[in-house]
Amino acid sequence: MAHVIAVAGKGGVGKTTLCGMMIQYLCEKGKGPILAVDADANSNLNEVLGVQVETTLGDIREEIARAELAKENPIPAGMSKADYAELRFEDALVEDDDFDLLVMGRTQGKGCYCFVNGLLQTQLAKYQNSYPYFVVDNEAGMEHISRGVLPTMQTCILVSDCSRRGIQAVGRIARLVEECGMKPRTMGLIVNRAPGGVLNDGIKEEIQIQGLRLLGVVPQDEMVYEYDCEGRATVSLPEDNPVKKALRSIVDSLEL
Image (cartoon, helix red, strand yellow):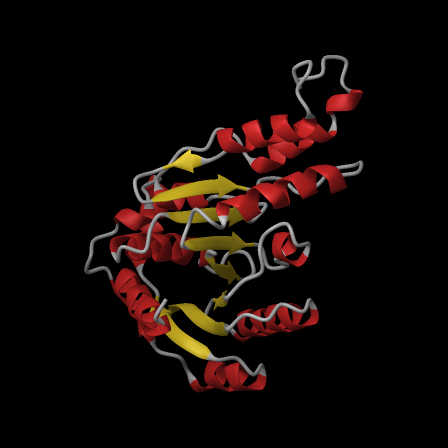
């Protein structure tokens, strides 16, 4: 069974960048093949990893959910919805050398999605036997895990920027994890974009108030911003980049 690593945090804190770097580093450490899952509705993990995505699982879910109402049913005659779904889900799998990527895409629209979500859940369960690791880039609400579409997690990494409001938001996500009955073996916080890689006393105090375990601190770095502006894959940053080095040190401490 795959070890599921869920990365979560409110928008704009850089969690997707760190998630992509983690995937890259695990691959370099020989932990692959890894299934990377972009479960954030505002999906851009593929851009961090430098791969192209043509189809998302959300697109396929909409297609199948609406198939019976459409004038031209996309499901071939004689093929069941389950068989068609499995075929299309395979189309959405983007394959790279050491990792594969699935993009969940848009959230559910109108209508009943129970059947299609069940098919998706079954397909992802099959993938659990094919990969030693799932790395899931979640939205703050971790919808796909809380709904049971994605497998439960063994490691939960919460990402915040270097602000009290950010730490408080992560504290709420940590409480959501508990309320939903998720029981990761490891759950902790990475503070991203810290000036000089150092936390001031106010941020340290807020981390204690929220009852969070600090896994590590990642410094603010202009090169990450420049790569993003230029549309360059963030994982292609130089090996001595301080963000890359800090994230890799944190991954090593987790002993994944």
